[in-house]
Length: 441
Image 1 (cartoon, rainbow, N blue to C red):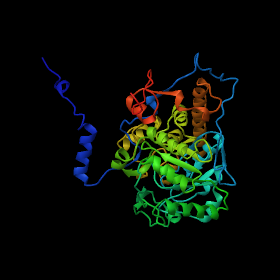
Image 2 (tube, rainbow, N blue to C red):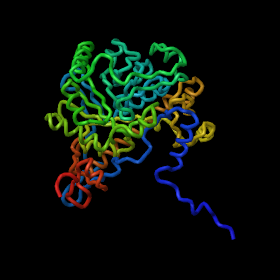
Image 3 (cartoon, helix red, strand yellow):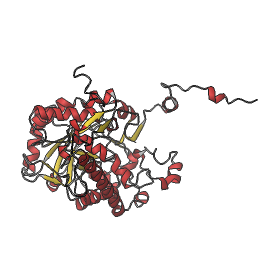
Image 4 (cartoon, one colour):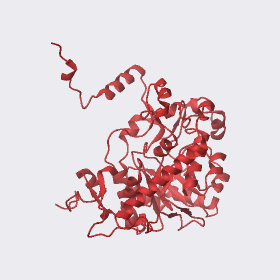
């Protein structure tokens, strides 16, 4: 009688198959792992919260007859030309270089069709994204790659990037195989040489210098453009306070579930705090200053996937959210009809993470002209616009169920937590109780 010996094998929780494989790879190559995408391990997130829909004690709104507003205005305190968004969902900064020109154009088309903004990313502004983005935010990063005062003036807002959620405290990466002639010219870089951006701005060392820089940016653009400050979620409460003190119109907080085109895996998985506590900490800082839902707006990013995530982030205090990884998936990243192409790269749809290598079969994270042609920017823009509309409709549906006539009327009181950890991080009661861990017994 034969026995299946594998049935008696016990896997290690600490040294699972992926960990063993990574140890063996590191021992063979002597290099740390670089990849794209975002954190893959399970972290507390918006799924750990639920909405308390209306019943007897609350009155819901009728979805077919009663309005639920979704608009948001950014920069109305300082800027002569604030941004008026139809939906509270923006497209995060992703560089030309990391993404193809067709992908940047598709992002602009999709965002414009949905009535929202897109963002340049490291490396400067392309004609494709400016031409097809009704509202375009220009990122100013530590690298200063592609920095051009004329492009600052062409933009509709400026985002000073101090850090991002996938790698707070770390700089960007763009491997040599993705530095095409056009990328090299825009960034003043040599061809085929790995590029590593600085992890901090060269012309300031603290919040007082940041205040001076924001003043310079306002003067360069005639006080017309809103100025954002983006931080990776770490010491979020104090970073938000200091960003506001420096003069930010908008604070962008990117949780550790945020994605990246390329960075060390040890950064992606082990630096920063999850988006769930980050949004609450940032909102608390704005309340402390008397600015929440007021002159200074809060945008939260990092792992936003659906309308429920949007609505929960807003209920916890965000004025808007930003998406990056989800937007690329909407364009066609990791789609199943490319299974054979992914198999040739040693991966499969849903698992492709080597955005840094430039051989993306979907034509999104590449500078290869043959691969780039696979992405139709018009069709990609339509897919993104559809996705943004679905996110908005889902968020409206949940808000109406809570009796809210605008997404910004959602509040922590509309939420309950399913785990003790989520209750503590979001500061909402554990479902079925009035207990918030750390706030009484």
